Image (cartoon, rainbow, N blue to C red):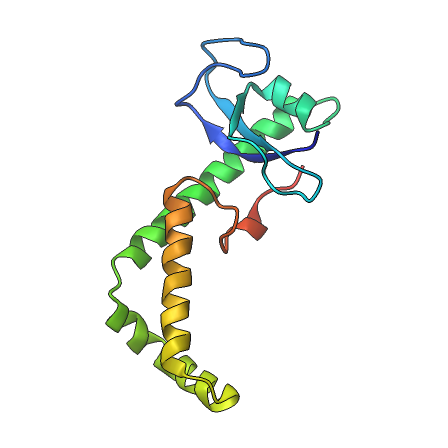
Length: 147
């Protein structure tokens, strides 16, 4: 079964695979189905168990730890983005992107106002994903480290 790295945490200090407790941090991974979609709740693992599940060879635990720390930094950036976007009212968002919406309407003949509304809802959905602790499905997903 393939797994994907989500990040690291110090909120959970026990490995779900081997049961080792009082870890300094755990790596958060999720199992994937055949299409590469998450098919489980997050799994908390020590770096050694996570490296095994991610099919990493020698030095895998260090690579997993480094990648997990990179995800943690990226999540911090995403949370700052979400905090900034959450505070923007729709009218401010509309004014800031007015030219883009007008260009969309001229280019497609479709309502620029509807495009703005859809875009606003997409932004709010992205902020909600970040608030829930995931970067998957957000603009930050492509920046996740690959192992």
